[in-house]
Amino acid sequence: MRDLENWLEEKRLQRVEKFLKERGFNVFLVSDKDSAKNKILEIIPKEATIGIGGSVTIRQIGIIEELEKRGYIIYHHWKEGLSFEQDLEIRKKELLSDVFLSSVNAITLSGELVNIDGIGNRVSAQIFGPGQVIVVVGRNKIVVNLETALWRIKNITAPLNAKRLNLNVPCAELGYCEEECNSPNKMCRIITILTAPPSRTPFTVILVNENLGF
Ligand code: SF4
Image 1 (cartoon, rainbow, N blue to C red):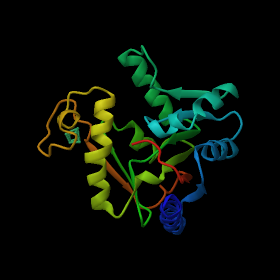
Image 2 (image 1 turned 45 degrees about the horizontal axis):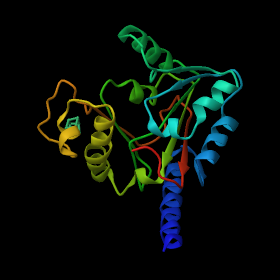
Image 3 (image 1 turned 90 degrees about the horizontal axis):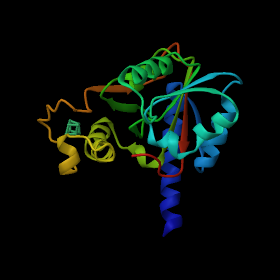
Image 4 (image 1 turned 120 degrees about the horizontal axis):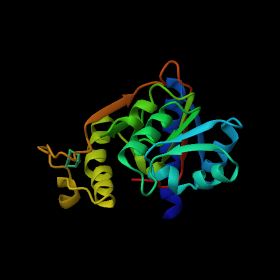
């Protein structure tokens, strides 16, 4: 049974890989999170500065610890005890890093990358600013089309993130999106869809045949 499921996942990943390549993204399909980490280490130039977007996936693959060991300068704002000003300063440095590492919230079977953001630093860094962008995407983020991408983000990604962060928003209570949400803490303020890599930003997608992130 498990073999059959893996076969299906592999086929879906191969389809996404094909369409991403046709759209002009650099793409690698790897089997697990360790291979994703090693691929990043292979790609990033020595002495590059690294910005890390708000991403559970990036933290799950253990790349931050590995980069720290190797002496890279890393900007990431998920640190305990930062003041508002320090947090903002780090987010700005992430935007101008040589390499920006992140994930996406959903990826369609035809290779569109979909994100929803609240502050906007994660999505803007995927469009312009860093020297290059690398996103790591687990197989659980694959959806049929743009409509299901938005449904997934609002009814799976956002509630899980809201619960994790203990945010006072409707989906943290309900487990699904309250469409009339106008909470001051609302996370869903900006939607981006990348249909091709931004024209001045080299963009790599590492697809992983494992579930990663939300
Ligand atoms: S719009 Fe509000 S309730 Fe809906 S997913 Fe976003 S934060 Fe949650």
